[in-house]
Amino acid sequence: MSDHFTEALKRKYLPMELQEFGYKCYQCEISLEGKNWVYEHLDGNRKHNEYTNIALCCQSCNIKKANDFDMQIKATDLKQKREEASIKYVETPDAIEETSSERDVNKMLFPLTEQIISERINTDGHYPLKDALAEIPYIAQKRYGCGAEPTIRRYIKQHTSAVGPFEIVTDEKGIKLICRRMNN
Ligand SMILES: [Zn+2]
Image 1 (cartoon, rainbow, N blue to C red):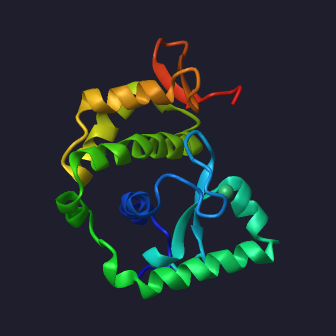
Image 2 (image 1 turned 60 degrees about the horizontal axis):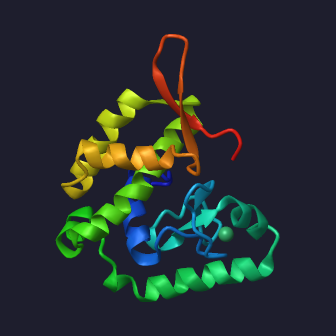
């Protein structure tokens, strides 16, 4: 296992995390939709990138945990439980494809779309809509064998709706860009 928690590992783990826990913070169990969140290393060691040591965590809990003993206990307890049960985990996206119904897969595509947009905005400040519509269906197809462009377009529309975490703005060249919603 590499020391680095790579983008490839994140993309591999996300659907597994969603399948196991849903799209919520493992500490406070708040829905992560529209929230800033991180992949947390349960034992606090960023070099321990085994699946059982990674959980989705809201940014607020992630920051609090550094100084909160109870939260640290909860994290190490969860890690231990998962290690004990690890034989049950579905370890590859291929296997997920076989065991998930199409509805479950679609459930994963909604947060996957948000995650990809969020990561791109964190890196580049914005995400051209045209690129999102080309790249996200590709990633979804490769991962799940589904997630056609109209489906992803619908999810982008939902994520950029008035209550969504993002908005679409048009730059001076007339290019549509997905940005983080400012009043959020
Ligand atoms: Zn939380």
